[in-house]
Length: 86
Image (spheres, rainbow, N blue to C red):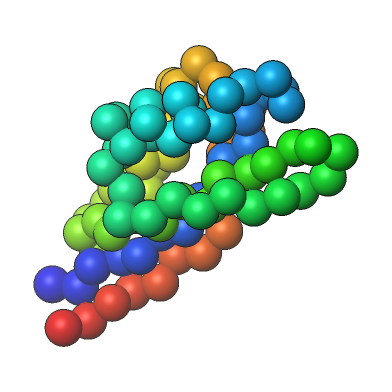
């Protein structure tokens, strides 16, 4: 069975959100493979999150729901979804 490589862009609710704490909470709840910081504008920084999941119905939505339920998260966007075979 193939895996899916998901990439999310997560924006904090405001520029006052401590990104280190937000990253730690995301690591605890989602266990992503990688988190990178991406400057947007006016001091706002997005988090680019990469997560591997099984290619099964509902997996993308489950990850998205976990991220949206984090209090300091303002916006969640799926940037890419790629199947990985092997």
